[in-house]
Image 1 (cartoon, rainbow, N blue to C red):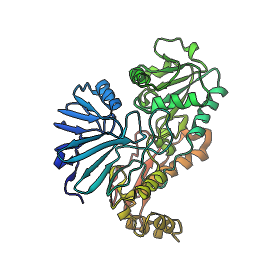
Image 2: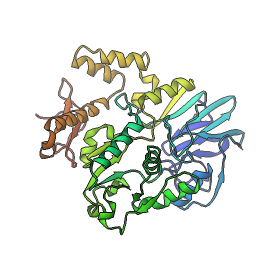
Image 3: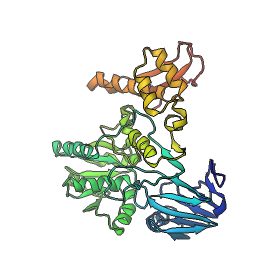
Image 4: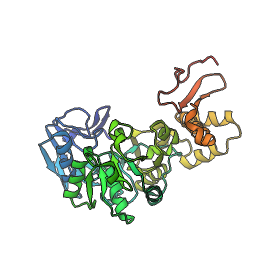
Length: 401
């Protein structure tokens, strides 16, 4: 471990620079990877970030003090050479490269490896220590082709000319990407947007991202929005705001839509698996590509992605689990390799498949799924009920059947 960088629950402290990376508490010096709220906030004394990220922070958090760092530009703080390179996550997102005492550390922030018309692509940088996110750090998360998901969205729109398609998308990054991807697929009709998206879309346009014709969805007669796509924050999908729309087909763009049970809990009719995070294959391929001596995991499933936890390596463990001769053997392999969360995912998939079998009657029945070990201890649980399981249990506790 490099003694000059220190991981803390509130961020990564770079001691010789006396600066914090993505601190969750106000700090005198902050190096910020991008503008999402789990990485950026107001209240810092001084911020170093890309020009786009500083603008986003100004819009979202009212920050005023900051130094704009261009991609590829070197900044010196206390003997540490700091460089920002593209992360491919959202507009202005950056990995932070730290060189000091003969070591190189790369802090990715959030990133993805897929093309995105709204931001520069991820740039792999070989290093000694790789600090990577792992939001989708489980083998079950393999994202489909983005173009095929956009085609599903457009097919639903064209098949229902008297309805609209309401897409839930996060205000920073996802909404703009969905719009730009639609334009790239030849959809040039006006797109209606919720008021909460207007200022961020305008900021993207100010930085040269082409989004085409956008119209406010508020105060517009419902009949004018028939046959159109409407974007809103996910929180507005089932809000009173959406009730005035013309018979909306409710969609949501998120990597979490891979777990269909989550889509059903949010009453999503058209789940679109579109993520601004790397999936399992992209995460593991990136680690192999940058070839670090150490990998630190943040923002995700450390127990799944950390190479130290995969005895014999990722591919070997995957293959061993795939060839498990029995349920007990599978359980033993998963627990031995720290993959405790796989049991909850299994329960979620049971709920998903059960609802598939029920077809049109799926909403008439709540499915609860619980996974126990052979001694009766609870390993994982899931439910199709938005309120969750009526049974309150803690993983590892004994439960009466």
